[in-house]
Amino acid sequence: MNQDSTKISLTNRSKMVSNKKMTLIERFYLPAIFKGMSITMSHFFRKETTIQYPEVKRPFSDIYRGLHVLKLDDEGRERCTACGLCALSCPAEAITMIAAERKEDEKQLYREEKYASVYEINMLRCIFCGDCETACPKEAIFLTNRIVPSEYKRTNFIYGKDVLVEKADARVDVSKRQTPEVLEFKKDKTKSHNK
Amino acid sequence: MDMTFVIYKLILCVVILLLSLVIAMYATLAERKIAGFFQDRLGPNRAGTFGLLQPVADGLKLFMKEEFMPANADKILYIMGPSLTMLVALLSSAVIPWGGSLIIAGKEFALQVADINIGVLYVFAVISIGVYGIMIGGWASNNKYALMGAVRAASQMISYELAMSMSIVTIVMTTGSLSLNEIVAQQHGMNWNVFTQPIGFVVFVICAFAETNRAPFDLPECETELIGGYHTEYSSMKLGFYLFSEYINMFISSAMIASLYFGGYNFPFMDDLGLSHNMITIIGTVVLFAKISFFGFLFMWIRWTLPRFRYDQLMRFGWKGLLPWAIANMIITGFISLLIKNNFFAFLTK
Image (cartoon, rainbow over all chains, first blue to last red; front, side):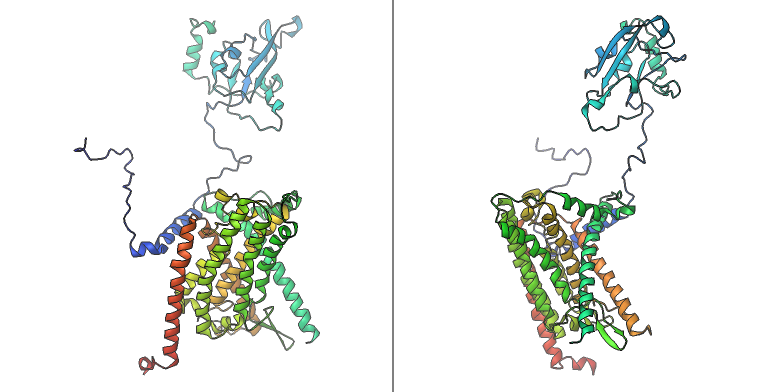
C-alpha cells in the first residue's frame, strides 16, 4: 500500500493541509486582506445573476413538466373518459375524479359516453413526474411549461376542471411533448393501458 | 452673545442632526445594495426606483412592530439602553468641523457646532460612554445571550479604545493641538496627516471598525452565535435605535477618519483655484462628504469581505498586535519631532 504514495485526485484541486508557521508578512494579514478585498471588488462589477421573477422569467425547456392541461379534441370535446388510469398511476395520489354518463344533448361537449364530471388535482401533492401523461390512453392529460402560482390558502391548490380543461379559444400547445417516440409508444396496443 | 449667533448655532445643530439621521437612514439602503452587488445580487429594488423608499418602509415596519419587554427585565434600564446608544451616537457630531467658514454680510460663520479646544478629548469621552448603552441594554434584558453580547462588547470596546487613543495621541503630538478645528486647519491643501502617520492611520481605522461593532469585529452582535447579542430581547423602535445608531456611528467614525487623517474639508490646490472664500468652503464641505462616503463604503467593503474574528484572536490582536504598534508609533513620532525641534535635520537642508 505505502509504496504507491501518489494520491488519486478527481479534480486536481485538492491541496495538502499544512501547519507551517506563518511568515512575517503573512502575520500582518494586510496583504491577504487586500487580496480578499480585490476579489469582492471584482464581484461588485460583475453582472448580477438575479432574475426578477414576475417581470422576467427563466427560460423553460420545451418539455418542462409544469401545470397540467386537460385537452379538448379538434371539435372542442373533452378527450377524458374518466378511466382513472392517471389516478391509478399517480405515485403521489394527487388525482381524484368522479365519472358520469354523457346525456344525449351533451355530445358536443364530451367525446365518449363516459366523462369526468369532477376532475381534481391537488397541486400540493403533485410531484410533476408526468406519469399521468404516460398512462393516459386518450391523450387527454399533458403537463405544460406553465407553472403553478403561489396561493394564500391550501384549499386553493386543489385545481378543478375550471382551471385544468383548456379553453376552446385559447388552446395549449403540447406538440413539443408529443415526440415521435411518445406517439410510437402510444400506438403499441399490446400495452394494456393503450387499448 | 448676540442673537444671530445663537440662532445660527441652533440652525446648524438641527441641520447636522437631520443630516446624520438621513445619512444613517440611507446608509442602511447603501449597505444592503452594496452587499447585493458584492454577492452578484441586485439588493432591494422594489420600494421606489432603485429601492429609494426601502429605508422608509423599514422604519415604518419597525414602528408597527409590537413593543415587547421581557417580564423580568429592569424596566428603566431596558429603555435607557437604546436611548443612551442613540444619544451618544449623535453627540460626537458636535465637534467635527463640517467645513471652513461662511462669510455672510461681513460676519464669519464657522461650519462647526462647538469649536472647543479639547475636541479630541471630548470625542474620546463620548466614545467611552458609547459602551454603556450596549452594556446597560444587554444587562437589563435579563437574557444570557444579551449579557454575553454586552460583556463581549464592553471588553472589546475598552481594549480597542487604548490603541485608538494611542494613535490619536501621535496626531496631537505632531499638530500640538487638541482642537479638531485646529487639527483639520493644519492639514491645509495636501498636508494630510495620513502621509506622516501611516501606521497611526491603519491602527485608527482598525480600531474604528472595532468601536462601531462592525464586521470583522461584530462579536457583540454576531447573529450566528448569540442570536443578535445585546439586542436579542429588543423589538420595535428600540431595536431600530440600536441598529440605527450603528450606522450613525459609522458615519461619525468616517467623518473622524476623514478629519484626522485625510484633511477634513481640505482639498489639493484649494488656494490656486482663485475662488471666493465662501465658494472654497462649500467645495470643501462637498469634498469632506465625498471622503466620508468613501470611508463608509470601505466599512461595508470590509464587512462583506472578511469573516468574523474568534474571540481570543480579537483580544490577542487588540492587546498584542495593535497596542504595541501604536505605542511604537508614538515613541518614534515623539523622537523624530524632538529631533526636528532641535534642528537635528538642519544639515540636510544646508
